[in-house]
Image 1: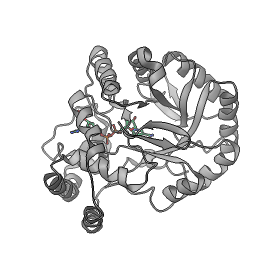
Image 2 (image 1 turned 30 degrees about the vertical axis):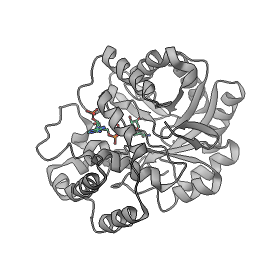
Image 3 (image 1 turned 90 degrees about the vertical axis):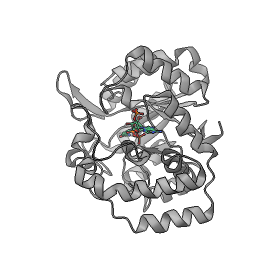
Length: 327
Ligand SMILES: NC(=O)c1ccc[n+]([C@@H]2O[C@H](COP(=O)([O-])OP(=O)(O)OC[C@H]3O[C@@H](n4cnc5c(N)ncnc54)[C@H](OP(=O)(O)O)[C@@H]3O)[C@@H](O)[C@H]2O)c1
């Protein structure tokens, strides 16, 4: 697969998000199958794998560590710190105190079965800890050889600037896709100015942009999309127009809607690396096939024009999560 640069870190141009092997989008396969899919993604050319302490919590890092152990020197692993957990209650807040960051790094290294983490993101900005202290803790860990690169997720532009002045940032990871364009007005320009890469999460709109989800989809009781305002039947009906647009282009390009959604992101900037997630190896293959889809300037203008006429209904996240973003 072609590669791209996130700052100085060279990764496959499409990465792989492993979150859905932890409780998120309904029933996940057993560990054996999950490991087969993760290893299969690497065999197909993916070298950039995304996980987080919060996925599970902890179990997803363990899974990724086990899956990638045999090929550890051929892949790059990104993980994240910064949530606070209480056993039995899950996430109860944020915690990016320097001593906590250092403790999480040590624990993540063990779970990931590695002696260095390639990219360590703060999962959400913690308003209780100055970002300079967070960047300082990460800088110490890089100095000790435990981490290679620093990232922020869903951070505001001012926060990115302050952190970058203490420890250069390699990548910003925020939600970005054809139906979530929040990073465009500020963050992408800032990435360009500072030489920071950008990693769009949920590049397939949590699956909606693939056209495989509609008002007839029955989400499992544990599926978090049940709580997402964009996944109410009314919002899905209203937002079908964006899927129709992708579907039309897919037919014209002999591709799939998922591939068009990912290919569109690849055209936005040469330092953008989407990390689609799926529990299905065939779909990994489909998604990385987006690398071969060519969208011309005309196609892009057509997408822009059509998308401008579609008002996306529903907030991208539930209110409690939205409040943690762009801090
Ligand atoms: N930084 C953050 O706060 C944050 C937040 C969310 C996610 N992330 C990261 O971003 C990664 C990707 O985001 P995401 O998993 O939320 O959303 P996504 O990649 O936009 O979509 C994932 C969903 O799409 C489905 N899907 C994937 N490929 C498909 C295809 N070709 N055809 C039909 N359906 C397909 C998957 O179902 P199946 O599994 O059934 O195929 C899954 O339900 C995560 O794994 C995680 O690493 C980060």
